[in-house]
Length: 184
Length: 125
Image (spheres, chains in turn red, brown):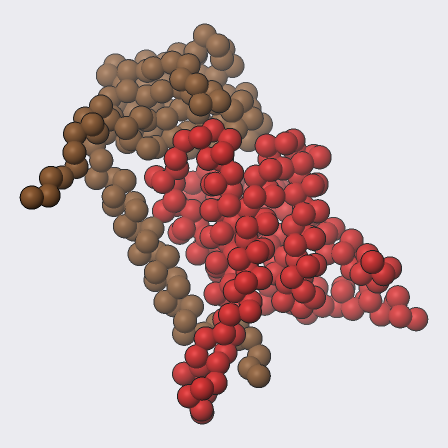
């Protein structure tokens, strides 16, 4: 791994931890069911996936899972890994999918899925991955909780998708600042 | 080659499908009648059966740091010394399949499937 890649990975990892911590500082919203979180650090995973590559996104998820494992214990770490890896793998697959483009002049043209689409699927899959993890931990089916996770996935996935869009110039700037200084 | 758009028509279909699915599962779960008992479970082992028939507030003998409350046929974690308080914030549960989990203690309060679930849901002729 080159110094540039190492530095970039470290920067993105630090950003995702900082966002997770920021989210932790926010008070729990009373109208939200327990366990429902914004998932702000997913912004960084998505940035890595779309603008660097799937391998970088998987690496960020692994690092994040490892960090949770060290700081919050085995159970929280496993759940973070289950959610993070499942989500990133599904998003990486969806990023390759192409659908027919109705607005195109020629009928045969295809378009990639939108950022919003992939962001929502990522959030839902993060929730489902954690739910499967919980099932293995205490072997009880949680079907009654699936609607909550679906709705919150749609909501939180939309929010993080919009935030990726808004924060893109800032992350780009930080990433380029690191990369450029290495070139000189 | 098209660049990836931020939002496009197919997103609405995805959102509609996910919300519809959530609604269907919710309706299926809500149609089941309220239960008359709850179970306290640790590591898949039932520690205690709790009747929801009479209102009471108590601490299980194995877990003096946890307080449970039964009220109006529902049950909840009233208090717990765990750091995340997810179990307490879950609130009252009463329908089969509902649960409140305290992951730090690997402790779960759940409503088991009602005894009448041995009977067939429907008979096709």
